[in-house]
Length: 232
Ligand code: TYD
Image (tube, rainbow, N blue to C red; front, top):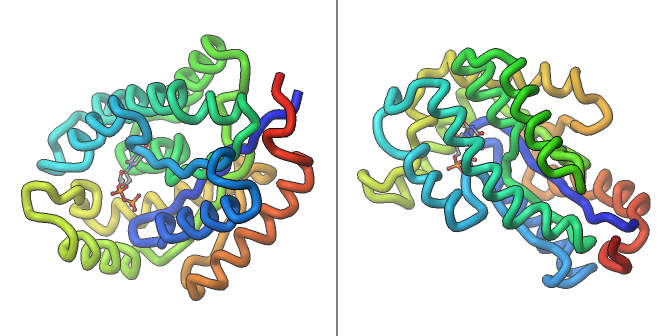
């Protein structure tokens, strides 16, 4: 069986993930075409998950209990996984995803205090229900940036693009200590997953960050041989 490739980008606020997702997506499309490559994001990436996105990213900081927030992220994620990600991987395609479960582990886990064992339990549940493919990215790039610099960058972008009521800045409005904790948790994720996760210095130029990611993606692609050439 020739399976596809599932790549995720992670990082704190203002780390430039979304720009890097687009650049990586465009370069992959140049090589494999837009039938084989998709770009998606979390929370969101399917019709139902985009509805949940609004509930999660707007409104008061304490709008949800940590556990409710975590379950909403996973409700969105399961829909996204089943409707968008898994079908693409199974037909041998390449998925570039802006955030995935590592975001929940660091924001709801590290940041909000939900114990790790709950994440392990949910992942095990999903893996048992859908045994066609592991519920796991093949590679995760973690863009590391000083939270003070990142949050300032991110707030600037949000105030340029959204009306007050529509602002998706519920997490950006949490205090800086929360974002420092998120960064520490990303370091822990890197340590726990040395084969899957790669740290990228997000303080570099956009071009240099892209080249660092691309160099590694090339090694992944040589392992997959030709994406989409045959299916299970
Ligand atoms: P978004 O507007 O997509 O911005 P960005 O990804 O560029 O920061 O915001 C998503 C927010 O949701 C972000 O602050 C991180 C948070 N988040 C979680 O707390 N848990 C999760 O599982 C995911 C996917 C995101």
